[in-house]
Length: 259
Image (tube, rainbow, N blue to C red; front, side):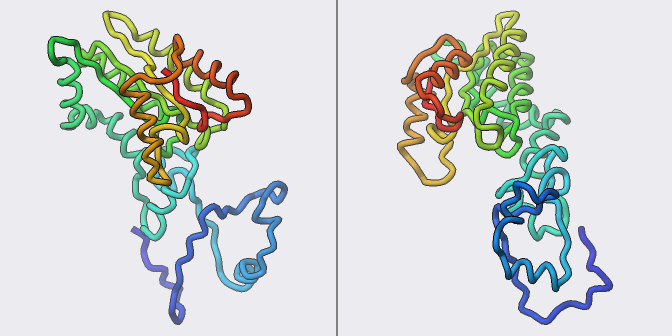
């Protein structure tokens, strides 16, 4: 917990906390929109009043490493806290590293269900989420850990529904994640264990509705992931290549659904 600064006598109120989302101080003037902007009020405040720069990324705001960027959610969780709180990415990473996640009721329930199956059919364990290492909403390393653990606990079939990113990571980087991940699945696909990417699409096209309460977007995801409706490909690598060929110039987050 931060302690009160003894040399600060305080200021007559009121005190206003202003959150300027998207504002950042660059070390380099070239390419900095903030440096290029006309902002007389801010320039005067910086020139005439005490100020200090704060780190808004990495371990300073509770992310797992200093390579992890901040964003609006990270800032909203950290601002005014007076101490470093672990963000969601760090909590999940720690739970995996310590093994606590595997002892959780939710994990044990879904693994037991996948092992037991229903109506005489073998069970399938499904994972759905943002498919990147942006570490804001997800990290592909967490997914790998869960797939490995599922196999270790006797699950025979895993299906992954990948929401392509292109927002927290470079805009057309999907294959940087899909290709090595499919190689990873092939490597661990031994001893009767079958894990594959079953469906997917861009995060702004299906399922991952963060902004607009967009039911058609969610419904489109339901039809893709649950009903298996959409263009079909042999694997996710072919899907990304095929969709890019059909929709040239489209970035990952806007690619349509695939099976």
